[in-house]
Image 1 (cartoon, rainbow, N blue to C red):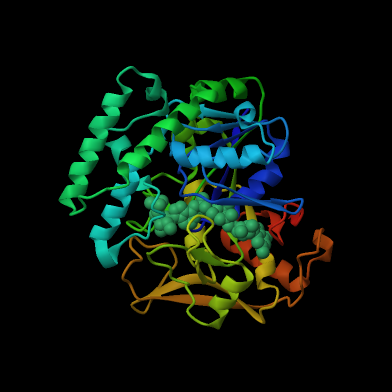
Image 2: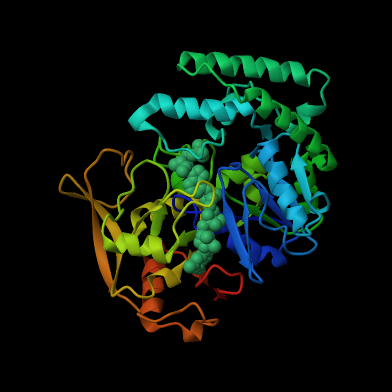
Length: 423
Ligand code: GDP
Ligand code: IMO
Ligand code: MG
């Protein structure tokens, strides 16, 4: 068996959580492979809404195994909060969720360091989610990190103290020396580390490969989006992990020849939260309408999401990097009332047409080249089959398929699990 991967093709918040939940009944296992509580994956069904940060979106369907893979960074405190909220909703999480021993831990000082790094960058700040993601992955790569599996080591506390001392020194060098809340944060953190013990702490690479050998179907759930990938995104305005398909290999221990379908998910328009380039960003009434109708506010931080037209230059790039085999278009209903829909097919930079996503889009004067298509001016949220969809909408989808060279297999017309049209 091979694994299928579902990941975002834009700057995150494409609707990954919703679709993973929709697809879960076809799978035996759902596994997160990177990122951490910077993610906010929203699911809606039966009149209820849930936002998941570290926990895979497969937990609400029955019988599946959910795994937090080695590529994820875990904040025990936020994990405990998330898990307890789910327990209140009747989910027996320790039964359905397993944690990789190799996943790295986010320490309280990682979060403080994230804030200190941002403050030091001033106007050039990344606009991170403040969850300690960058500093935790920095420690992982510089071989200083602490992993879930280390929590049972006799010298765990010493290693924690050593990491903390290093972080305090780094913060002092950035002019951040007083941390009155640290003792309280640490106390909670150690309690939350204890809380992790009720979970199966596993060698997830062995477990997943064994499940595959037994013929089980595995869906790998991405967080963030391709344009936030540390290698291929709009660097340095990116997150600190590989959000692309290759991240599923390193973040779960799945070999490249075990990758099956790659579901690439995108919105019918485009959003971004945090700083950094966004060539098709709108500052006009259309952008505001997208934000209002699409409720484009961050699931984690509540920040306003920047909105703009679909960017096919960036999407072509994302399809290429990820080897996308199936596309999923979300939030189509948000554009229901627009007279004209625009799609950016190329960039114009210094008077030249640029077709391929360039090395650096930051600081460049980029003029998006748009194709205009007529809007469908029909509410689609209640539609449940392709036959009902308006012609102009189908034309928009066909245009995107032609531009990207990959079929769109799922169309989403509302936030609820039921508002999904599978083609
Ligand atoms: P994720 O991080 O990729 O899982 O996406 P988020 O949950 O952060 O953001 C997607 C938002 O759009 C959530 O509030 C979803 O409830 C909502 N949503 C998902 N699909 C649709 C859709 O087709 N139409 C509308 N109107 N909202 C949607
Ligand atoms: P989901 O999984 C949208 C953005 C932040 C910031 C940059 C770096 O819900 O799609 P970080 O805290 O990761 O160091 O922040 O990445 N960012 C996201 N934007 N959706 C997300 O996750 C994001 N996770 C991080 O806003 O610009
Ligand atoms: Mg999100």
